[in-house]
Image (cartoon, rainbow, N blue to C red):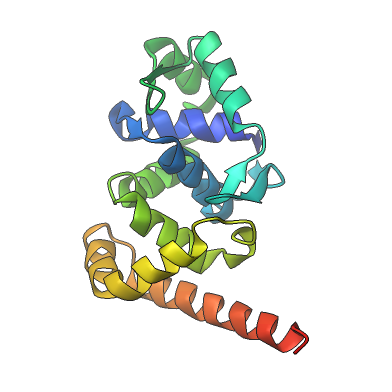
Length: 188
């Protein structure tokens, strides 16, 4: 089974009893995290659809996907920032993925961990764990400053949201190694 960005978006909006997602940044990062962190036998996720952008990884055709899903009555968008699945969208997800409990379970875990944390902490997680997608970021320095100032707070929120300290430490180590590799390659 192949999951597209549209599939991931609708699955995320469906998850956790249709809990809404507030903000395009939040929705884009949830989709990105799902595309990177779901690994199930027989499930392929289209990850080529993400590019480094102004605020980190971003689906290439994100606005088109939102427009399509809205036009097809699969989701609703309020004030250009509150996203929720429609009853028609719920039925479609249940038809397509109703017998794919493992996919729904993985999506629910991601939404539970990341939907309610502040955007700056969500961005910090993404920037630390996937530094390859931050090359064009206009907010990278701000996020790194947030990381420095809020690290203790981040660990506290991570514990509350069941993001293990090992996940946090692994992301920090990966980011550190990536930075060291870049420094070694940079001409002086």
